[in-house]
Image (cartoon, rainbow, N blue to C red; front, side, top):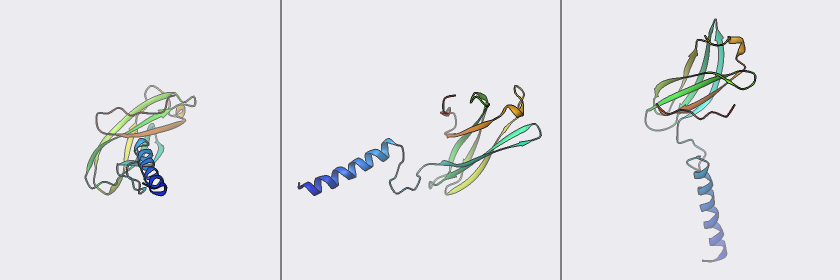
Amino acid sequence: MDRRQLLATTGAVASVGIAGCAGLGSSDNTPDQPYINDSTRETSGELIIVGIAVVNPTDNPMQLEAWARLLDEDGSELDRRSVSETVESQQGVTLPVTFDPSRYNVSDVESHEVALTRPGTEPTFSES
């Protein structure tokens, strides 16, 4: 094997390895798994609604669980909830996660975090 062929082969293997380790899937920059595109938070009376925009780029409908957690100004978790939904193939949908605060005040909520899992799987959020 000459030097140029060795460098080309090593570079291709390294690129695939890095993409695989990072969980990026295919190398053509097209997601191959459902993902969260955006999230919003609004208050309606005493309810807090986190809208989680989910996209399913796969060729199959997928049962997903969208999670949201509310944080106070110190980054401590106030509450967490989820909603399950089947998202059709090649479709996007906004899933509302509704909070009815009883252990805290609506004004205590400073921010939120969201995650996407398969049903029955706990999400991994950043540490508070």
